[in-house]
Length: 227
View 1 (tube, rainbow, N blue to C red):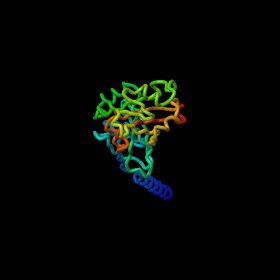
View 2 (cartoon, rainbow, N blue to C red):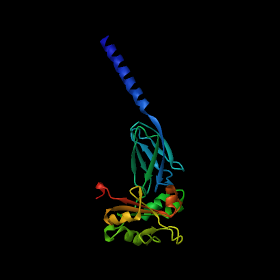
View 3 (tube, helix red, strand yellow):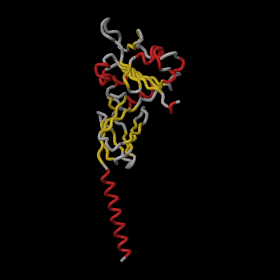
């Protein structure tokens, strides 16, 4: 009789655990971009707990079944793999993959069909400290002027689309570590502390509103683990 009781107890405990586990599972939707605005097509999204793998559609969208605090591994040829930790309150995930340095990565991104609007990708110029030694430049303005074709530095402002007129500003929006800032701030950032620079010249800058009308310069500085 005691053995039978133990069996019943174990059965109900296992049933409770399994039901609890199922209760934690939920549907999560999201989108995968590159350069914060270009949808990535056919990127792999893998759920850590179940090993489920799905691909993003033509809009970069995906949906998966995951646990409350699961981890997504997102990858695509030519891009750095990203891990996204799902928090309980997250209902829609926005994940941005960074294009790897070098022309080969751009060829992979286009050749494998990850980017539908090739013109947009080609309009984004990116430069990493893995490509060249930034320390050879005395300041960021000199670095940008020397490494990005067609980009000008005029009176302390960065011009990526040419000068509009005498009365209206042609300065590009400067974004440092995700925060819009003035070009004067760049004087306090030594080139050796810069991890990467992206220059956006086309409509992809529209996500920044009217501030991005003259293009956007995205600068990422080094963190502790980057040195």
